[in-house]
Image 1: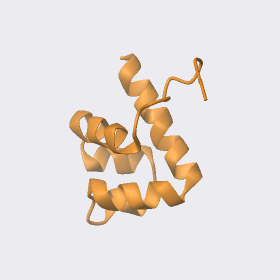
Image 2: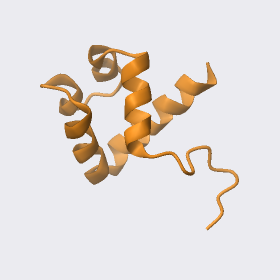
Image 3: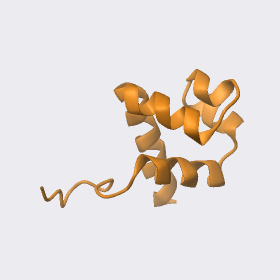
Image 4: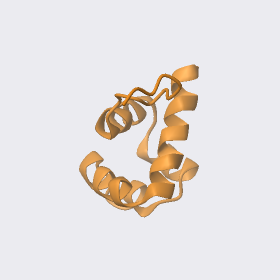
Length: 71
């Protein structure tokens, strides 16, 4: 299904997390988005597992990503 107005179309969650961890520290991410997977023993793998099961947290990560790529 085409999604011409969706800037996240075709971008994997893993890619989003890789870009965010390249741009920011885990501490910064934890301050921006208050979730334990960014605070306690953070890793991309644990974050992906949590974000795939938690829509509100995934939405916050996607919004931070969109703000990051606009800079």
